[in-house]
Length: 515
Image 1 (tube, one colour):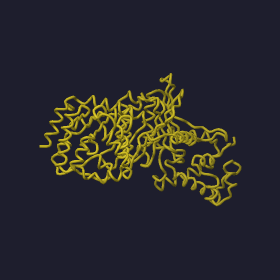
Image 2 (tube, helix red, strand yellow):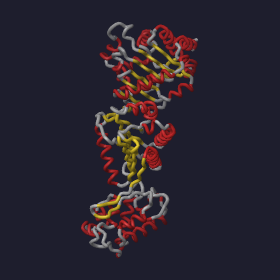
Image 3 (cartoon, one colour):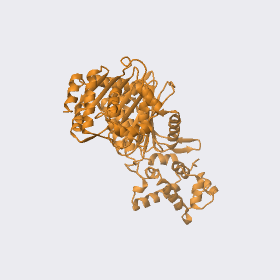
Image 4 (spheres, helix red, strand yellow):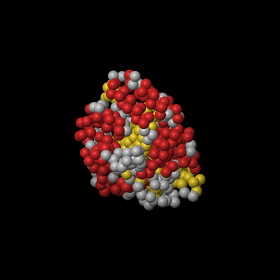
């Protein structure tokens, strides 16, 4: 029986090399390589031609993330091996096996089927119009979880610059309703970040509110790492079978489907053939081109844009809610009346040049002169601070202003007397104004919130940043994520013990630090 497609053609297709590339490397005519591929002529053994062909294929294989040739010819428990990890003797043995394999006249699909490892999914041709592509199928919700962890384990076994692309169209209750699996997934993501690998995620927002609440609850702290980038798809496109994709570019793809009216009919498939991977990579990239950043990353150079966004968002605070959470107060995040009073008393001289250089005067004027009656137009402000940080700052000669340092790109310090003056004004304003609230938390309570430093202006702007300079600075203004974040923030505030936000008690604590 004559093979419609030769072993050489199959291997060249798997290695993604062309006949012209091989012809140039071997210094032969391109038509000769075409005859070898189509079984019109055997590869000559004399003059070492077949050995040179084997060397070319091995060199091409060494450029791959994992070897194509090794698991095809060598029985091994490690099908994901890279040829650079082999010693000289193993490489020589592999070369000899490849030369013999290229000369073998047995039907290709039988030989490939028996010698390929059961966990190694390589496509191979049965005819010029048909190739076989084995897949792993994981039925049900338990199978979906196993398949997802499989993909994360695969990524974690790969080099540090490997990417994982994720597209989520369907409801993710299979994650949210299983705290054990959710914790495992969280640890995998942390491991991925620690290894300097990157995660790119596209969400469907307009009909996945539960998923966005989960994002606000679990993913925000992780998003501070620059290796994690997320987008949202802004168009509503209903589907009878929404899709989940996990893609390791040029390596593997997990395709998950679930019929909307039959959630029990959930299936997940992992494919490793190049044709399927390229197809789903194209699908992901087409959606990515139409998507918008869910949380926008700001580099240190662009951090001042966050302040400008904040000023613009604060230009009209009528009927808005402001939530601030930092380890200690920032001058520029104090209530407007307190901020102005401290300005008049020359308590923030260090900020004058920053404001004048970066803030448009018309925006600042609008921010300072809000229309209408002051009492009626007060916005609700809630601030959360770490009590131990305030205690330490009040005892130090200088303390760092967290937000001001972040947006200015340099450390901004406040001396001890000025810091105590700020605390004193906060305490007086807290007792005088109903719309201003402060919660002081001990370290355990603050850590339970599990959120970074944040500022939230309802329906307008969300800003988050970490204490570590290497962490990203994030902002968001998309309406769905803003609503989800505000819902979660309100829930967090209600969970804070009443004693921690009792106005009289908090004011006394602040004043005691000023003594």
